[in-house]
Image 1: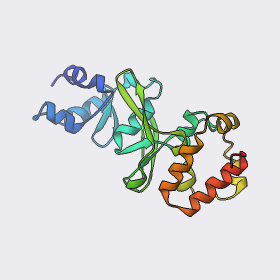
Image 2: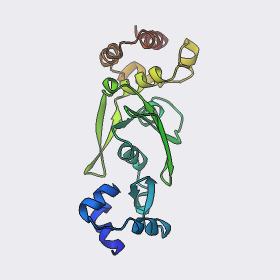
Image 3: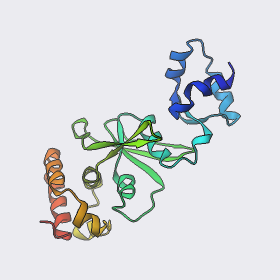
Image 4: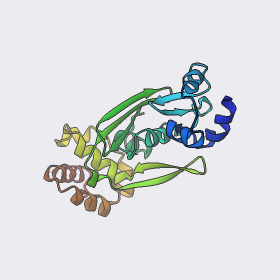
Length: 206
């Protein structure tokens, strides 16, 4: 098969997997992909997932790839908080939450990590438009905060939560307090409730 046939078929998807290729061409020889990776025509993202080098510099491409190569998942934790400007740090690793087991991947687009959460806690995400016709799945700001406080046990004391350096303007003006409290109750976790109360106390929101 000619590489350009595959490119024309899948390029607009941004990334694709081997099952999509077989659905398109049942007799496709997988060795073609190995050869095209070596020739830098395509990039291997993880087993059975590929993209194209032309997308390497696309803004937010790492978020889209994170959503695709390990599903169900959504961007959360430090990556989502940095995206919203809630924490000041530049985040090198793309962090996400999934109902699947904890996992991490490395490829030319970056480093990707996934924290495991119970299936019933996979709520509070929202879609954002990507490249006009695709979507990025992000935790809402409130859910990203809760996922962080829930999944990282080190955030237990007032000082540790202060050290996160949440943006004061966001906390005072943009945080949806009603949503934060509603989502907190859905976790049914006393430990999380205590951490949230500490957070609200720090920013004079209770």
